[in-house]
Amino acid sequence: MPKTPIDRVQFVCGFPRTGSTLLMNLLAQHPDHRVTATNGLCGLFAMTAEQWVRNDAFRAQGIEKVRPHIRSALQGMVTGFHAEALESVESTTQVFDKSRQWLHHIDLLQEVLGEKRVIVCIRDVRDVVASMEALYHKNPMTRGAMPDTTAGRVKNLLNAENGIVGRSIVAFRDAIRRGFSTVMVPVRYHELVENPQQTLHNLHLNLGLEPWDGYDPMNVQQRTQEDDMLLAGLQGLHDVQPQVEPGPRERWRGLIPDDLARVIDQQFSDIQSLVHGRA
Image 1 (spheres, rainbow, N blue to C red):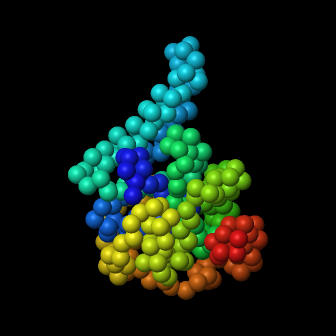
Image 2: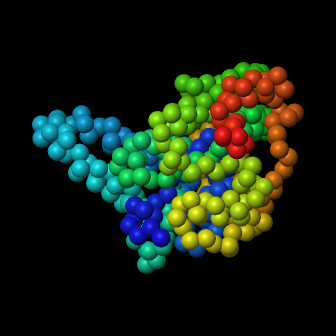
Image 3: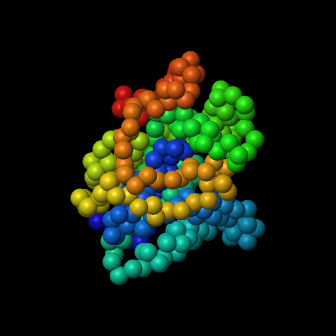
């Protein structure tokens, strides 16, 4: 069981529409768990790390001399942010901090916090964009300016520079390329919704936590709240249903054309292989 405060902070990231909100609200059922909605701590953490090397006073002292102090300060930022939970009487309290940006800064996490495992939610890319497409059609008055065609909207989502899905995939691929797959704990969407209790059991084992059989996927209460209009302009992006239902595989069928689905499957074959356990 992790003993230090920093050991008791877990980081959750991944692609949009991959079940991270569901995962957090299931984890929240455990009496020793504290979970966040999409959180801004990562931005503060990364911003501080990016700025300290530009500070003239630190540079005058010598960057390498100051580096250990900055590392300690960044660790303190994480534990201080979650101090209320971490300073509880129960030393077993676990904090799960969620942000897609943790995937972009996985190297920084490892340097500052040591070998830190990061939970990464993944899903068939075709289903990810199809899920976004379904939300687009549910929000005709509030969805903002988007391309008029399914193909155009999918292209925007998967854009490597500024697409909400594409940027996450770039960060995921980059983390694997640089050898961080050993600290990444994948949670596959279809496994989470088809067998949530087994998925959570495996997650506990991967994080070194005691198993717990009290999760109830048939009675999920939404404890995390997010203003979807502020974050993405699509209402319902982070809604959680009260019961976990597996639904059909290949949910993309009927939402995106078959020819476009084939292109996505080929373009992201490495992701697809990881999602479906072929690699």
